Length: 119
Image 1: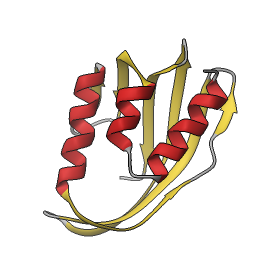
Image 2: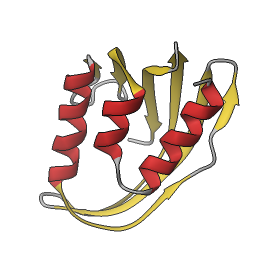
Image 3: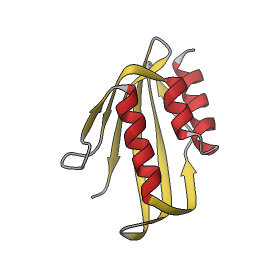
Image 4: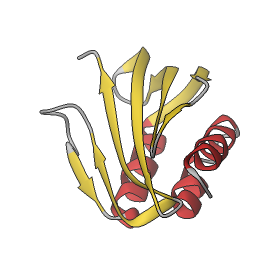
């Protein structure tokens, strides 16, 4: 798959709520995930660890009221998209979040992801 194919499949799976399956199918074994500096799990390495981080986030959510996945924009072997969520967390109450995500694709797999959001 080329970068556009990966980006399209990523968007489809995310919109269907198949985030864990997305990691299983589209991520490289040695993927690196980066959150904003100072955040828990600021750098997570390896597909299983990224999967675990995503699963932990899902388990912290009591209810998703709305979500938005923007159209991916591809440049070379990178793609980016805006994501937004309106969630009620089990601890912390209801929050609206917006972030920009940047993904790097190598050999048809997501090799890195980085999230940018207001703190």
